[in-house]
Image (cartoon, rainbow, N blue to C red; front, side, top):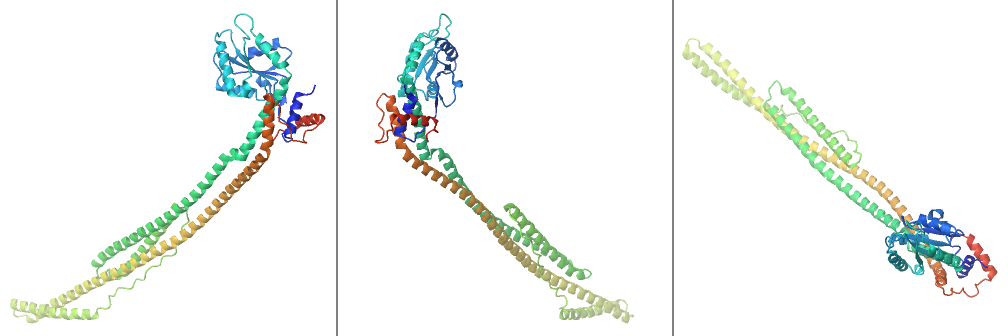
Length: 503
């Protein structure tokens, strides 16, 4: 008698020589399985006693590539099948056509027949292959009486003794394998397994571009804003310092004395230099803070240029001094005559003494008047000189601020451009990597689609042949001229059993 499995393999080899093997190992065992608390353990023990000529195993005793000769699916009579129970049937009978349904514990559930009818209807509605599944009730370990297994034992022996069972099991294994291969080719051709990765890559690419544009715009805007704020704040700081120094030096010039006059010019020069240094230091610190906030490096500050301070014009008042002396002399003569007459009226005798006293008083008054008028003139000259110095100082520090801010703006902009260029290069490298991977996925998908288009017709033909055989109809004829002789079919089948699973 020929091997039914080899005959099925030979049939499929004639339809599609590239199908290879179904990738399962047919074992002459009966798998007894079912959901938790369905009574699987007691039933398998009872079956081992009643049908000792066959081997009964549980799901843990089979490997993922093992195909049992029959599957006994056990469910409790408590309630009809659930979705998880049906999924368990699909998994257990994935490579086996012979399936027997058992409703257990019928000794304690009087409505087990209703449950059995519901189970039969539910499973038959799930797939056409389950419409011919035989359902029986059983009580493997009843609380009272003997086990009720006769109907199950009879059904199992009939199914296991059917010579067509092995062929149908092999056909069912081929159907599962071909369906999986066709589904995999369709998924690969559509890129289904790569859709999530491709979507993630595209999203990452868009995110890199968006972050790059946003970062560049934000940093450029931040630099412009900080530079403008620095220009305004530092200009205000410089004007404020010059104004305060102007008030301070003006007060000193208004309170100037002859003794302090020689010290005033060096003092003004020192105060002007101090203002320049303060503005320079404040500008340096402000620019450094801006650079730190932007993540850049502040340019080194150049030495500050101090404005030229001319000496005060105190030596250009000779005519004014002579005029004051003449006026003072005249006033002194008048005072002297008045005093001499006063003395003559008091003591008519000593006229000469009155003249001398009057002359001394007039001279002192003239000298005092000349000194006061000269000091007031010097104070006015110094006040104007201080105003000119502070005006020159204000122009100098404003120029210093403007120059330093412009230089810092140029340096920071150049450094920011270098940073942007480096970040653009890094972003371009990342995008190039993403694009390369996307192209690789596109090429892989295109190749899978080409392979799918090439393989699907023959695989679908093989699947139609298997389903036709399972439904009891004739298989599809092999292409003309491709049907090998019987001996070659056996050799092809033996080779297919040792071949790798179909692609």
